[in-house]
Image 1 (cartoon, rainbow, N blue to C red):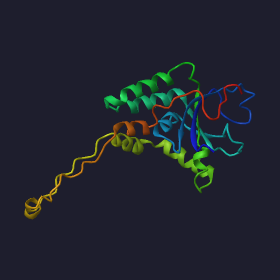
Image 2 (image 1 turned 90 degrees about the vertical axis):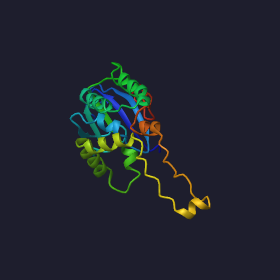
Image 3 (image 1 turned 120 degrees about the vertical axis):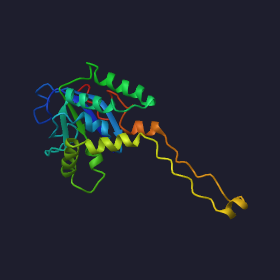
Image 4 (image 1 turned 90 degrees about the horizontal axis):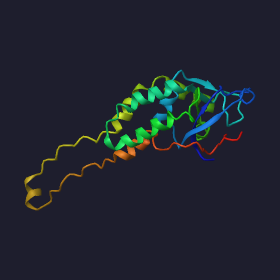
Length: 201
């Protein structure tokens, strides 16, 4: 198992009659071992639980949300990211999501593989994710904070004998890699070809 979360766009709500209703599922992105905040923001436009299009499970273990509203919510969040090094990835994301070939009425988020890594029932985990998507403000604040360099701590006072015998040393400054934090948001991984591909189905 790949242990990824999968993001698609679709024209119908997933369910038993989706195929007969002319379902289209277009790959948008996939993410290893997690559910990044970008995915959650894209699902935040009138989100609902729904059945999976990947796994044969009668329970509602996936999420669906309005495509246009989700993109608007993501754009609002990304407008607060001022790092120059992030702007190319932000532009790439907005252009990909606004490409008419990728647009549909809904986003669908499939996290069954991520849920399967835990011990809690999959349906319960999906309901927890649903609640998160409905209240993303704390996670948005935390994500924006992660892009800031850590505060510089004041130097530790050096005693007389430490100076005398050359034992004093410069304090280690924490290493901050802004690109690592930027990618962790869920940017830079857009593709129509995902592990579960519905192009010809």
